[in-house]
Image (cartoon, rainbow, N blue to C red):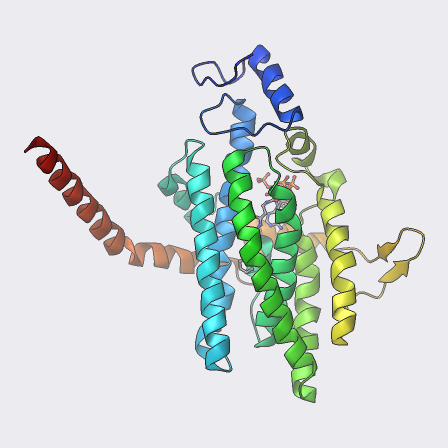
Length: 325
Ligand code: FAQ
């Protein structure tokens, strides 16, 4: 059946079966293809949340631009933050292909209706936090996003390929900051340890609830939006990252962490799920501040958007007048 039609009801069972067949055959779904209402809704939710995470994620690092310890570090940090803004823009554009406008998405973010990653509600207290964010937060993001490169929705999957390449640079620059600090003075080593102490558990929370508590995973995996479950990705991240911490000579803040020779992976402790739920519900250390900063930036940028729109309108009229002449 040709599912390349958009004029059929979004809950047509015959089309739904053909749609799933397409997914099972690893054929990408494109914006003009027929898709079930639930698939569209799930994608809009996940992709817009992801876009919001990218732009809110600029804030904790932006906080350190004026205090970077050297010109080189400042230039690298500035480039990284700009990359994150760019990721947000690809993702908003990709989400718009599903029929929601950017204004609606911004509105959902600014009114607190939409979520963004819990990790960005933690404060950045010392310079080593820039290292820990690059190493751990971008590291966790890549672990998740590599799987999303094979998402069944074409525009999301393609955006992820480019984003992962940039995130990989971000992860390395973060690790390099940590390496420098771990090999530095006693105070610098202490700052590096303090940063890992504070960022380790929140980074593990980025992968979401346990599979058994995840309301979305089963359906999202059937639709191949997600390829790997939250717990599997989290374990992958732990297994890759613990040896990196040991190489730095830093401790991972988990008493239960132990190599399991049989499983060939690490056993580790339990996330504080009350803290996770609290932060996701909007009550973390920085939730209110982050949202207010976003709202202020949006309001402050209104004159730029108005000017760009006025210019585009003028150009449109000029082109039409040229064509008519
Ligand atoms: N924080 O059933 P599940 C970066 C929500 S940043 C907040 O497991 P799902 C840039 C979840 O949305 C990384 N909310 O849901 C950067 C759902 O809520 P809903 C950005 C969370 O969707 C780096 C509910 O809990 N990456 O790269 C969190 O199947 C460094 C139930 O959960 C993404 O956003 C959380 N941690 O799986 C910038 C990845 N976890 O909608 C600066 C894209 C769960 O039902 C510096 N997203 N929730 O109300 C995903 O892969 C998925 O949405 C998961 C959750 C894995 C986050």
